[in-house]
Every structure is written in C-alpha cells, then in structure tokens.
Amino acid sequence: MIAKGGKNKMDLSKYQYIWGEEKPDWALVNSPYGYGIVNIRTQMMLMISDDELEKALIRKMEESGNAKYDSIVDAFELNREVH
Image (cartoon, rainbow, N blue to C red; front, side):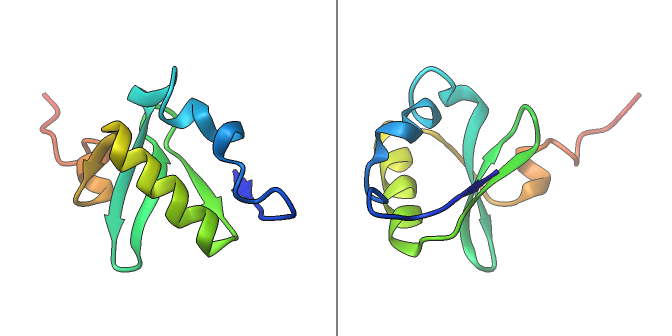
C-alpha cells in the first residue's frame, strides 16, 4: 500500500484504523532507514511518500501503544522453530 501526501496530507483520520480497530495487526518495525509501518498479519508494508505524514503516523502509533519490533524477523516470527 502506498500513501501519498497532498493538500490534506496531515489529515491522519483516514489512517485511524492503524491505531484503532486494526491496532493489533499494525506495528512499527525498525530498519536501517528508521521505522516502517507493517501489517504483521498480512505482511504488507504501508509505504508513505510524504516524510512529514510518515513521521506523524509513526508518532501517533507510538502514542497509541502499537507494537514495535527490532526487525522484520521478529515481527513476522521468522526465527521461531518449526517442529
């Protein structure tokens, strides 16, 4: 998914699902480039083309207590043992 800026680029209300009803599915995942917004259920990343919008969304997610992971491996539980 790609979110673009625009004349209403700081209207965070259309992204409320990220920290609202779908909060358990959306998390912040650390990378060498900073935090990414990832749906850990669908393994989809929300790409933000506007730096200010991305910062505002990350800040809102942090304030709302969304999960944060140190890596994509941790977020998707790729390091768990399979029996």
